[in-house]
Image (cartoon, rainbow, N blue to C red; front, side, top):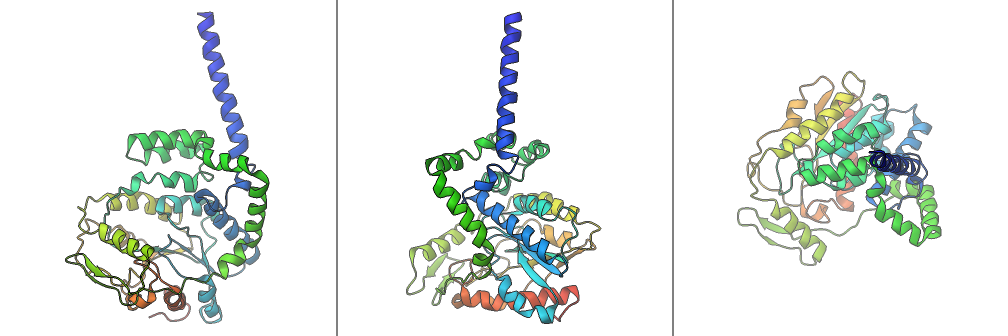
Length: 366
Protein backbone atom coordinates (compact mmCIF):
# COMPACT_ATOMS: atom_id res chain seq x y z
CA UNK A 1 0.00 0.00 0.00
CA UNK A 2 2.73 2.57 0.84
CA UNK A 3 4.40 1.80 -2.48
CA UNK A 4 1.10 2.33 -4.31
CA UNK A 5 0.66 5.66 -2.53
CA UNK A 6 4.17 6.72 -3.52
CA UNK A 7 3.46 5.88 -7.16
CA UNK A 8 0.18 7.80 -7.10
CA UNK A 9 1.85 10.76 -5.40
CA UNK A 10 4.69 10.74 -7.92
CA UNK A 11 2.23 10.67 -10.83
CA UNK A 12 0.23 13.49 -9.29
CA UNK A 13 3.33 15.63 -8.74
CA UNK A 14 4.46 14.92 -12.29
CA UNK A 15 1.14 16.15 -13.68
CA UNK A 16 1.27 19.24 -11.45
CA UNK A 17 4.84 19.98 -12.58
CA UNK A 18 3.88 19.43 -16.21
CA UNK A 19 0.92 21.78 -15.85
CA UNK A 20 3.11 24.36 -14.12
CA UNK A 21 5.67 24.39 -16.92
CA UNK A 22 2.92 24.47 -19.56
CA UNK A 23 1.22 27.37 -17.78
CA UNK A 24 4.48 29.30 -17.44
CA UNK A 25 5.13 29.00 -21.16
CA UNK A 26 1.66 29.35 -22.61
CA UNK A 27 -0.55 31.11 -20.04
CA UNK A 28 1.86 34.03 -19.83
CA UNK A 29 3.14 36.07 -22.76
CA UNK A 30 6.40 34.09 -22.82
CA UNK A 31 5.69 31.79 -25.76
CA UNK A 32 2.67 33.58 -27.33
CA UNK A 33 4.97 36.54 -28.00
CA UNK A 34 6.97 34.43 -30.47
CA UNK A 35 4.19 32.50 -32.20
CA UNK A 36 4.63 31.97 -35.94
CA UNK A 37 2.84 35.03 -37.42
CA UNK A 38 1.51 33.06 -40.40
CA UNK A 39 -0.10 30.36 -38.25
CA UNK A 40 -3.77 30.34 -37.25
CA UNK A 41 -3.00 31.27 -33.64
CA UNK A 42 -0.32 33.74 -34.72
CA UNK A 43 -2.56 35.68 -37.08
CA UNK A 44 -5.42 35.67 -34.56
CA UNK A 45 -3.12 37.13 -31.92
CA UNK A 46 -1.70 39.74 -34.33
CA UNK A 47 -5.20 41.00 -35.12
CA UNK A 48 -6.02 41.19 -31.42
CA UNK A 49 -2.75 43.04 -30.70
CA UNK A 50 -3.31 45.48 -33.57
CA UNK A 51 -6.85 46.35 -32.50
CA UNK A 52 -5.92 46.74 -28.84
CA UNK A 53 -3.12 49.13 -29.76
CA UNK A 54 -5.37 51.13 -32.05
CA UNK A 55 -8.01 51.53 -29.36
CA UNK A 56 -5.43 52.81 -26.86
CA UNK A 57 -4.51 55.61 -29.27
CA UNK A 58 -8.01 56.38 -30.56
CA UNK A 59 -10.41 55.64 -27.70
CA UNK A 60 -11.85 59.15 -28.05
CA UNK A 61 -13.15 58.39 -31.56
CA UNK A 62 -16.42 56.74 -32.56
CA UNK A 63 -15.19 53.33 -33.63
CA UNK A 64 -17.12 50.63 -35.49
CA UNK A 65 -15.43 47.25 -35.59
CA UNK A 66 -16.30 44.52 -38.06
CA UNK A 67 -16.10 40.79 -37.51
CA UNK A 68 -16.13 37.86 -39.90
CA UNK A 69 -14.03 35.55 -42.02
CA UNK A 70 -12.27 36.16 -45.35
CA UNK A 71 -15.58 36.66 -47.17
CA UNK A 72 -15.94 39.95 -45.32
CA UNK A 73 -13.73 41.55 -47.95
CA UNK A 74 -13.65 45.26 -47.34
CA UNK A 75 -10.91 47.73 -46.42
CA UNK A 76 -11.25 50.01 -43.38
CA UNK A 77 -8.88 52.40 -45.14
CA UNK A 78 -11.45 52.97 -47.90
CA UNK A 79 -14.36 53.11 -45.47
CA UNK A 80 -12.48 55.72 -43.43
CA UNK A 81 -12.10 58.01 -46.42
CA UNK A 82 -15.71 58.91 -45.56
CA UNK A 83 -15.14 59.50 -41.83
CA UNK A 84 -15.66 63.24 -42.21
CA UNK A 85 -19.12 62.45 -43.60
CA UNK A 86 -20.09 59.41 -41.54
CA UNK A 87 -18.50 60.41 -38.23
CA UNK A 88 -17.23 56.85 -37.69
CA UNK A 89 -13.84 55.14 -37.83
CA UNK A 90 -13.96 51.56 -39.13
CA UNK A 91 -11.72 48.75 -37.93
CA UNK A 92 -11.71 45.03 -38.65
CA UNK A 93 -11.27 42.30 -36.02
CA UNK A 94 -12.04 39.41 -38.37
CA UNK A 95 -9.66 36.61 -39.26
CA UNK A 96 -9.82 34.34 -42.31
CA UNK A 97 -11.22 30.91 -41.53
CA UNK A 98 -12.92 31.89 -38.28
CA UNK A 99 -16.52 31.59 -37.10
CA UNK A 100 -18.72 32.72 -34.17
CA UNK A 101 -16.98 30.42 -31.66
CA UNK A 102 -13.63 32.12 -32.24
CA UNK A 103 -15.25 35.56 -32.61
CA UNK A 104 -16.60 35.24 -29.08
CA UNK A 105 -13.14 34.83 -27.56
CA UNK A 106 -11.71 37.58 -29.78
CA UNK A 107 -14.28 40.13 -28.60
CA UNK A 108 -14.16 39.00 -24.99
CA UNK A 109 -10.48 39.95 -24.80
CA UNK A 110 -10.59 42.86 -27.25
CA UNK A 111 -13.57 44.52 -25.58
CA UNK A 112 -13.59 43.26 -21.97
CA UNK A 113 -16.09 45.91 -20.79
CA UNK A 114 -18.40 45.35 -23.80
CA UNK A 115 -18.78 49.07 -24.38
CA UNK A 116 -15.73 50.24 -26.37
CA UNK A 117 -17.39 50.35 -29.78
CA UNK A 118 -20.29 52.21 -31.29
CA UNK A 119 -21.19 49.08 -33.20
CA UNK A 120 -20.05 45.54 -33.86
CA UNK A 121 -20.81 44.64 -37.49
CA UNK A 122 -20.94 40.89 -38.17
CA UNK A 123 -20.71 39.71 -41.76
CA UNK A 124 -22.47 36.49 -42.82
CA UNK A 125 -22.98 34.87 -46.21
CA UNK A 126 -26.71 34.46 -45.49
CA UNK A 127 -29.31 35.43 -42.92
CA UNK A 128 -30.65 31.87 -43.22
CA UNK A 129 -28.82 28.98 -41.58
CA UNK A 130 -27.77 27.07 -44.69
CA UNK A 131 -26.08 23.83 -43.70
CA UNK A 132 -23.07 22.62 -45.65
CA UNK A 133 -21.22 19.31 -45.63
CA UNK A 134 -19.47 19.87 -42.29
CA UNK A 135 -20.82 20.22 -38.77
CA UNK A 136 -19.59 23.67 -37.62
CA UNK A 137 -19.57 22.50 -34.00
CA UNK A 138 -16.75 20.09 -34.90
CA UNK A 139 -14.38 22.61 -36.45
CA UNK A 140 -11.11 21.36 -34.93
CA UNK A 141 -9.25 24.46 -36.17
CA UNK A 142 -11.21 26.70 -33.76
CA UNK A 143 -9.03 25.32 -30.98
CA UNK A 144 -5.91 26.41 -32.87
CA UNK A 145 -7.17 29.93 -33.53
CA UNK A 146 -8.32 30.64 -29.98
CA UNK A 147 -5.77 28.59 -28.01
CA UNK A 148 -3.98 31.56 -26.45
CA UNK A 149 -7.30 33.14 -25.44
CA UNK A 150 -8.65 30.04 -23.68
CA UNK A 151 -8.53 30.32 -19.91
CA UNK A 152 -8.48 27.30 -17.66
CA UNK A 153 -12.07 28.08 -16.65
CA UNK A 154 -13.10 27.90 -20.33
CA UNK A 155 -11.72 24.42 -20.90
CA UNK A 156 -14.64 22.18 -19.98
CA UNK A 157 -17.23 24.41 -21.63
CA UNK A 158 -15.16 24.77 -24.81
CA UNK A 159 -14.59 21.01 -25.03
CA UNK A 160 -18.28 20.28 -24.53
CA UNK A 161 -19.14 22.53 -27.47
CA UNK A 162 -17.78 19.84 -29.80
CA UNK A 163 -20.12 17.00 -30.70
CA UNK A 164 -17.50 14.50 -31.83
CA UNK A 165 -16.20 12.62 -28.78
CA UNK A 166 -12.60 12.48 -30.05
CA UNK A 167 -12.56 16.25 -30.68
CA UNK A 168 -14.00 16.82 -27.23
CA UNK A 169 -11.03 14.96 -25.79
CA UNK A 170 -8.57 16.84 -28.00
CA UNK A 171 -10.10 20.18 -26.95
CA UNK A 172 -10.14 19.21 -23.27
CA UNK A 173 -6.52 18.06 -23.33
CA UNK A 174 -5.43 21.10 -25.34
CA UNK A 175 -7.30 23.50 -23.08
CA UNK A 176 -5.46 22.15 -20.04
CA UNK A 177 -2.07 21.54 -21.63
CA UNK A 178 -1.70 24.09 -24.43
CA UNK A 179 1.59 22.62 -25.53
CA UNK A 180 -0.32 19.80 -27.24
CA UNK A 181 -1.98 22.33 -29.55
CA UNK A 182 1.17 24.36 -30.15
CA UNK A 183 3.63 21.48 -30.51
CA UNK A 184 4.15 21.98 -34.25
CA UNK A 185 4.77 25.69 -33.73
CA UNK A 186 7.27 24.85 -30.99
CA UNK A 187 9.11 22.38 -33.21
CA UNK A 188 9.39 24.94 -36.00
CA UNK A 189 10.63 27.55 -33.55
CA UNK A 190 13.31 25.24 -32.16
CA UNK A 191 14.53 24.47 -35.68
CA UNK A 192 15.31 28.15 -36.36
CA UNK A 193 14.75 30.33 -33.26
CA UNK A 194 16.71 33.39 -34.43
CA UNK A 195 14.85 33.48 -37.75
CA UNK A 196 11.48 33.19 -35.97
CA UNK A 197 12.30 36.03 -33.58
CA UNK A 198 13.36 38.31 -36.46
CA UNK A 199 10.16 37.50 -38.33
CA UNK A 200 7.96 38.10 -35.29
CA UNK A 201 9.57 41.47 -34.60
CA UNK A 202 9.20 42.57 -38.22
CA UNK A 203 5.56 41.48 -38.38
CA UNK A 204 4.64 43.15 -35.12
CA UNK A 205 6.24 46.42 -36.22
CA UNK A 206 4.64 46.43 -39.65
CA UNK A 207 1.31 44.64 -39.18
CA UNK A 208 -0.82 47.78 -38.80
CA UNK A 209 0.67 49.39 -41.90
CA UNK A 210 0.66 46.24 -44.04
CA UNK A 211 -2.93 45.34 -43.31
CA UNK A 212 -4.30 48.89 -43.47
CA UNK A 213 -2.68 49.61 -46.84
CA UNK A 214 -3.41 46.16 -48.30
CA UNK A 215 -4.36 45.96 -51.99
CA UNK A 216 -6.44 42.99 -53.13
CA UNK A 217 -5.81 41.14 -56.39
CA UNK A 218 -7.20 42.64 -59.60
CA UNK A 219 -8.00 39.27 -61.17
CA UNK A 220 -11.68 38.69 -61.85
CA UNK A 221 -14.26 36.09 -62.78
CA UNK A 222 -15.36 37.99 -65.90
CA UNK A 223 -17.03 35.60 -68.33
CA UNK A 224 -17.99 33.14 -65.58
CA UNK A 225 -21.43 31.54 -65.98
CA UNK A 226 -23.22 28.84 -64.02
CA UNK A 227 -26.41 26.83 -64.24
CA UNK A 228 -27.35 26.20 -60.63
CA UNK A 229 -29.91 23.53 -61.52
CA UNK A 230 -27.41 21.28 -63.27
CA UNK A 231 -24.23 22.45 -61.55
CA UNK A 232 -22.56 23.05 -64.90
CA UNK A 233 -20.47 26.15 -65.24
CA UNK A 234 -18.35 28.00 -67.77
CA UNK A 235 -15.15 29.32 -66.20
CA UNK A 236 -13.62 32.66 -67.03
CA UNK A 237 -11.49 32.48 -70.21
CA UNK A 238 -8.29 33.00 -68.22
CA UNK A 239 -9.39 31.21 -65.02
CA UNK A 240 -6.61 29.64 -62.97
CA UNK A 241 -6.86 26.44 -60.93
CA UNK A 242 -7.52 28.31 -57.69
CA UNK A 243 -10.58 29.98 -59.19
CA UNK A 244 -11.87 26.69 -60.58
CA UNK A 245 -11.35 24.99 -57.22
CA UNK A 246 -13.29 27.76 -55.47
CA UNK A 247 -16.24 27.16 -57.81
CA UNK A 248 -16.10 23.41 -57.13
CA UNK A 249 -16.04 24.10 -53.40
CA UNK A 250 -19.18 26.23 -53.64
CA UNK A 251 -20.93 23.67 -55.84
CA UNK A 252 -20.01 20.93 -53.37
CA UNK A 253 -22.28 22.57 -50.80
CA UNK A 254 -25.26 22.38 -53.17
CA UNK A 255 -27.87 19.81 -52.28
CA UNK A 256 -26.68 18.81 -48.80
CA UNK A 257 -29.54 17.86 -46.44
CA UNK A 258 -30.51 20.63 -44.07
CA UNK A 259 -29.79 19.27 -40.60
CA UNK A 260 -30.20 22.44 -38.55
CA UNK A 261 -26.67 22.12 -37.17
CA UNK A 262 -25.54 25.55 -38.37
CA UNK A 263 -28.56 27.15 -36.75
CA UNK A 264 -27.82 25.36 -33.48
CA UNK A 265 -24.19 26.47 -33.65
CA UNK A 266 -25.19 30.08 -34.35
CA UNK A 267 -27.74 30.03 -31.55
CA UNK A 268 -25.04 29.10 -29.04
CA UNK A 269 -22.07 31.17 -30.17
CA UNK A 270 -23.68 34.21 -31.74
CA UNK A 271 -26.03 34.08 -28.76
CA UNK A 272 -23.13 34.22 -26.33
CA UNK A 273 -21.57 37.10 -28.21
CA UNK A 274 -24.83 39.04 -28.18
CA UNK A 275 -25.40 38.23 -24.52
CA UNK A 276 -22.09 39.98 -23.70
CA UNK A 277 -23.50 43.15 -25.24
CA UNK A 278 -26.97 42.90 -23.74
CA UNK A 279 -27.69 46.29 -22.18
CA UNK A 280 -24.53 47.78 -23.71
CA UNK A 281 -24.44 51.00 -25.72
CA UNK A 282 -22.82 48.99 -28.54
CA UNK A 283 -25.16 48.11 -31.40
CA UNK A 284 -24.87 44.71 -33.09
CA UNK A 285 -25.48 44.85 -36.84
CA UNK A 286 -25.66 41.79 -39.07
CA UNK A 287 -24.76 42.25 -42.73
CA UNK A 288 -25.38 39.81 -45.56
CA UNK A 289 -22.16 39.96 -47.54
CA UNK A 290 -21.90 39.90 -51.33
CA UNK A 291 -22.27 36.16 -51.93
CA UNK A 292 -20.52 35.45 -55.22
CA UNK A 293 -20.14 36.33 -58.89
CA UNK A 294 -23.35 34.45 -59.77
CA UNK A 295 -25.17 33.60 -56.50
CA UNK A 296 -27.58 30.70 -56.24
CA UNK A 297 -31.24 31.64 -56.77
CA UNK A 298 -33.36 32.30 -53.72
CA UNK A 299 -35.14 29.26 -52.36
CA UNK A 300 -32.67 26.76 -53.76
CA UNK A 301 -31.62 25.82 -50.23
CA UNK A 302 -34.46 25.63 -47.72
CA UNK A 303 -32.77 26.29 -44.40
CA UNK A 304 -34.46 25.02 -41.27
CA UNK A 305 -33.86 28.20 -39.28
CA UNK A 306 -32.76 31.82 -39.45
CA UNK A 307 -31.25 32.56 -36.07
CA UNK A 308 -30.05 36.09 -36.82
CA UNK A 309 -33.58 37.09 -37.82
CA UNK A 310 -34.69 35.96 -34.37
CA UNK A 311 -31.83 37.84 -32.72
CA UNK A 312 -32.92 41.01 -34.55
CA UNK A 313 -35.86 41.18 -32.12
CA UNK A 314 -33.45 42.20 -29.38
CA UNK A 315 -33.26 45.94 -28.59
CA UNK A 316 -29.62 46.52 -29.63
CA UNK A 317 -29.50 44.14 -32.63
CA UNK A 318 -30.17 45.23 -36.22
CA UNK A 319 -30.18 43.61 -39.64
CA UNK A 320 -28.75 45.52 -42.56
CA UNK A 321 -31.25 45.42 -45.46
CA UNK A 322 -30.70 41.93 -46.82
CA UNK A 323 -30.27 42.88 -50.48
CA UNK A 324 -28.26 46.03 -49.86
CA UNK A 325 -25.14 44.68 -51.57
CA UNK A 326 -26.73 42.48 -54.25
CA UNK A 327 -25.59 44.92 -56.95
CA UNK A 328 -22.00 43.81 -56.27
CA UNK A 329 -22.72 40.17 -57.12
CA UNK A 330 -21.18 40.34 -60.59
CA UNK A 331 -18.32 38.26 -62.07
CA UNK A 332 -16.10 41.26 -62.77
CA UNK A 333 -16.13 42.22 -59.07
CA UNK A 334 -15.00 38.84 -57.69
CA UNK A 335 -11.54 37.25 -57.70
CA UNK A 336 -12.98 33.75 -57.12
CA UNK A 337 -16.30 32.14 -56.21
CA UNK A 338 -16.72 33.91 -52.86
CA UNK A 339 -14.18 36.75 -52.50
CA UNK A 340 -14.44 40.25 -53.92
CA UNK A 341 -11.50 41.54 -55.96
CA UNK A 342 -9.90 44.98 -55.80
CA UNK A 343 -12.65 46.63 -57.83
CA UNK A 344 -15.35 44.92 -55.74
CA UNK A 345 -13.76 45.97 -52.47
CA UNK A 346 -13.39 49.55 -53.74
CA UNK A 347 -17.17 49.64 -54.19
CA UNK A 348 -18.19 47.63 -51.16
CA UNK A 349 -16.11 49.54 -48.57
CA UNK A 350 -17.73 53.00 -48.94
CA UNK A 351 -21.17 51.42 -49.41
CA UNK A 352 -20.72 49.58 -46.12
CA UNK A 353 -19.54 52.73 -44.32
CA UNK A 354 -22.50 54.77 -45.54
CA UNK A 355 -25.00 52.04 -44.73
CA UNK A 356 -23.74 51.43 -41.20
CA UNK A 357 -23.49 55.15 -40.48
CA UNK A 358 -27.08 55.59 -41.67
CA UNK A 359 -28.28 52.82 -39.38
CA UNK A 360 -26.43 54.34 -36.43
CA UNK A 361 -27.73 57.83 -37.11
CA UNK A 362 -24.79 59.29 -39.01
CA UNK A 363 -24.94 59.89 -42.75
CA UNK A 364 -27.89 58.47 -44.64
CA UNK A 365 -27.57 54.87 -45.85
CA UNK A 366 -29.70 53.45 -48.64
